[in-house]
Every structure is written in C-alpha cells, then in structure tokens.
Length: 323
Image 1 (tube, rainbow, N blue to C red):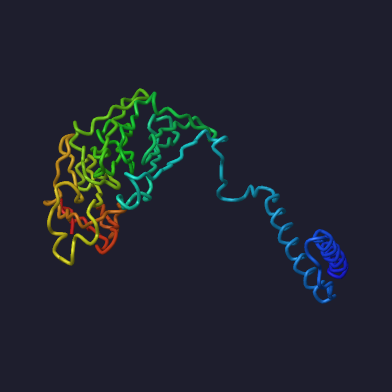
Image 2 (image 1 turned 60 degrees about the vertical axis):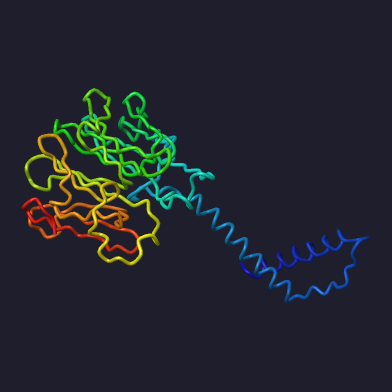
C-alpha cells in the first residue's frame, strides 16, 4: 500500500531530520525546520523507489535456476577449469609499444585422446598455456605438464587442433605473436604421441612460422587427402608508416605477410604466391574462417583485416589457387 508507506516514510524522514539537527548542536545552528508535508511526500516516494529497487535486486539474485535454459554458467570449482589469461603492462611492454597488447589469446576444443570427450586447450599471452582433459560429467583435469606442453616465453595467440600428420589423432598448432623483444619465437606444433603426451615439432614440418601470427586454419584446399595450412599474420609496423600507397598489399613480406602452406607428403611448403594469397605487411590479420561459400564443394576462406585494408574473400578455384 502506497499511503501507509508514505506515512511511514514521512516519520522516518522527520526522525532523520531531528537526529541530524541534534548532531549539529554546539557547532552549527539549525536555521530552519520547515520540513513540509510536500517535501516529506517527495522524500518518502524517493525512498520507496530506492527500497523497491533494492528489494527487487535482492529478489532477482534469489530467483531459482531455470533448468530449461539453454546454457548455465559453471564455476571453476565445478569444472576444474581455472584458466585466466591475465596480462600485466610494464614500462617495457604495454599498449603504447605493442598495439595488440589487449587483443587476447585463444582456445581450441577437440578430443585429443580419442576417448569421445572434447578436451580444451587455452593459450596465454604472458602466462602458461593449459591443456585440460575431459574426465566426463563436466569435470576437467589439468594435464599440461604431464602432456609435455611448454610455454617458452612467447606471446601466444590463436590455437588450432587438427590431425596434421594424418594418423587419426588431433595435434595442436599454437600461434605466437612474435615481433616483440623477448617474444620473437616461431609458432609451435605439438604432435600427438598417442599416449597422452605431445612433442613440439613445428620445425620438422616446416610450420615454424615467425610472423606476428594471430591464428591458423587447417583444411584440404586441393582435395588430395591431407590438410594444408593458412597462417594469418598481423604487422608490427605503425599504421602511419605505410602512407597512402594503394599497391603496398602486392609487395610480399617474407616475415609478417599471410602465408599458405601446402601439405606435400607430410611436409609443408609455402605456396602463398602461387595460390594467389596476398602476403603484404599491410594485412593486419585478425581472424580467419573456412567454409564452402559458393556451394561448389571446395573450401573458401574469409580473412578479416584491421585498419584500412579491406577484408579478403578467397574463392577456391579448384586448381590449387584462390581468387
């Protein structure tokens, strides 16, 4: 009932006023006690509104869990997944000298031990990467060290699970942003040893790309039965340093441009130029997705770029090239 509430609030307001007046004795003089009924009503209504919002807020937190909801947030206590990609800026490394400082890291989900349950791999920019094995019933176990996963002082970004060597077991390709003092290292390729452990062999497969890699995608672009690889790179150069040269994307950069690697008998060969892939340092790659956009049965690619370069849509020409 509003009327009784207003009456009650009126009394509260008057009591508060009297209390405050008494508190000021000896130091301050209350010059006026013209607390009108109108002001009381206004104060009461405001207090009723505040109390109503407060109680509604409290009740909202007490609402029962909707068991019919599509998703429910689960705590790290429930799942065992306690990963946090915490970054700390310093005088030597911050948003001012590294433009992508707050771009984030990566996560990939796949069944790495072939037990029928999806496992999780997290990358970290300044911390340690983590591999969590799914134990069932939403319980995960951190097996990073036991699995042989090493975080070697790299600014890790995207991560992709794919059967790179074609043995029926998922491998893990981890991208490194590179280009930073102390972080300038190639990407990692963890080959699944089929016994719960992995071995880093990026150099062996010629996938130790040293660009400012954001992400990578594996797919069979030429339909020869094995997976090929697109490595999406960003650029360490400042935006203003490029000027207004419209043809600069045609100038291939051997370190920071995007690259396309063809799987040839288990070894990866850079065929970027032959495949029609732009490799300029102006790309500033942010993301890549693969799909059959024109429904011809062959995978195409969509590349999102930052700043003044437009995104790229590569249509598979079904002859080893893109357009």
